[in-house]
Image 1 (cartoon, rainbow, N blue to C red):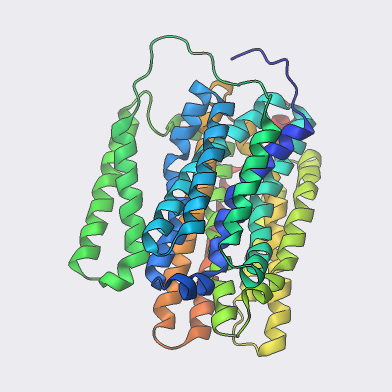
Image 2 (image 1 turned 90 degrees about the vertical axis):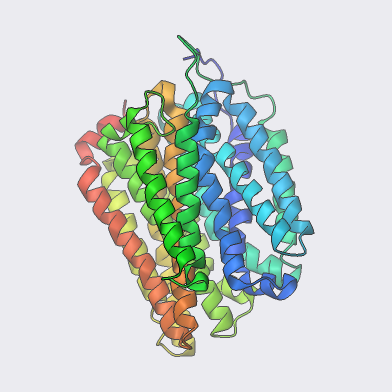
Amino acid sequence: MEQVAYKGTNKLITGIVFGVITFWLFAQSLVNVVPAIQQDIGISSDLLNIAISLTALFSGIFIVVAGGMADKFGRMKLTYIGLGLSIIGSLCLVLTQGAVLLIIGRVIQGLSAACIMPATLALMKTYFEGKDRQRALSFWSIGSWGGSGICSFAGGAIATYMGWRWIFVFSIIFAVLGIFLIKGTPESKVAQTGAKAKFDLSGLITFVIAMVSLNLVITRGSTFGWASVTTLTLIVVFLLAATFFFRIELKQLNGFIDFSLFKNKAYTGATLSNFLLNAAAGTLLVANTYVQVGRGFTAFQSGLLSIGYLVCVLGMIRVGEKILQRIGARKPMILGSLITAIGIGLTSLTFLPGMVYTVIVFIGFSLFGIGLGMYATPSTDTAVSNAPEDRVGVASGIYKMASSLGGSFGVAISATVYGVITASGNIDLAAMIGLLTNVGFCLASLIAIIVTVPREKKAMEVVTE
């Protein structure tokens, strides 16, 4: 590994946060403005659900590749590429008049996030140490988890008063600002030693086939028919591709996914729980769509309903950092998952009348934010701190792959559950079951943490290394 003399600055942190929120704030805002987009470009709900989930799906698929490329070719270089792709993808969405350019733009945004997230996490580990690193990761988490909170309010406000396309005009502006703020930061990459490793193309191809086919089953299964030849064929394709993928990876010395990283239980727990808790992102889609379609809220009003989530997730991220420094990662991760489950559970009480439901949902969203904010920094620090120096880009890539794939499949599953039950004519029940699905993801995250993340004494040893 290179000798690092450069120390990270607040300017670098700000630039990285701007880069991160091009995905978590702006790209994810699409989940909150579904009715506005449908009305504007006349796209069907199942195609729109595909477009929504594609960004997180393609981010998750290619993020590990991008993490490896960041280690090899340079973390700054990949960050610049990611910001450039963000500008192109956002421009596609600004100009779209139908499904084609919308889907292309969403795929490009996914590739952008795949470059930005592992590269910037690796920069945080390289140029910050100890408590400075934990502070930097807190701000990174503010851009990530906080961005997902801001998107509900900001996206709704922009869509209501300026038009939904302006969301992506602002995304372009922030990407450009991010480029200027990180300019001048020294390049960071792993020194190459020994023979040049062969890229695991077969692993990547089988992984892409497995993930895309599974996503199509979830998002289009109800349209194709759950027992149709198309759906059953996609399921078979997924099972075969997944089987070949694991067989290939377990035999590879330089696999697409380095399974040796999962020998570390703390890293495994942080990554698995991160996948499951990000799957709860479907909460925003179901809740915002339900209150707009079922309760007559505007996009801005639905954003106001979740403003407690925004305030609490932003406030709790730094609190989570301080708790991490005092008692380790395990307890705030457990408590964060539990509080998140309780918060989402409150939003599922759709049988409650008008104002009572509105108040309960506001409280639920606030607890949702408290839980995620408490979880964010301890989880990220656990993953990054337990990654070997020469594989921090790949390890960060796998960790963030868990975020993206969790979000993609969580949104797809929630949207499908909500859509299928809504088609039967009971929108209140549809929203309840769709939201309770996300409670299930949180409880699974809680179990994963309890089983895998070390207790406080071991966690503190990791933090103080």
